[in-house]
Image (cartoon, rainbow, N blue to C red):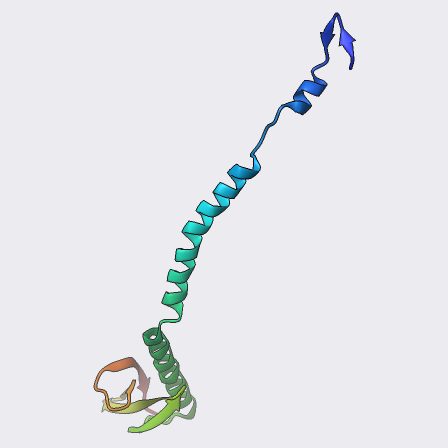
Length: 128
């Protein structure tokens, strides 16, 4: 140790002082963080993988696909068809109304044997 004017250098005393977090404090912080994060991740996963949401997303995808296909082919005829996706059956209904030079075209998707609409898209096109 260096001695200056009879005083001990502060290098070793600074090194021996404990600064920062101890292992116990770190473990307590991790436990508290996990108590908050575990329920939060379960809540978010439940929202994402909720079966009713998956059904609605599937219905919207079916409606968008049907609309894109109809616009691309210029096929605005009425009708309906049954589609099976993921073990569930959906009914796709196509409705058309004409007025002057406009075509009002609707796509409605619902679960088979149900009256409730899961998805409904429409477009207005000019007649050719």
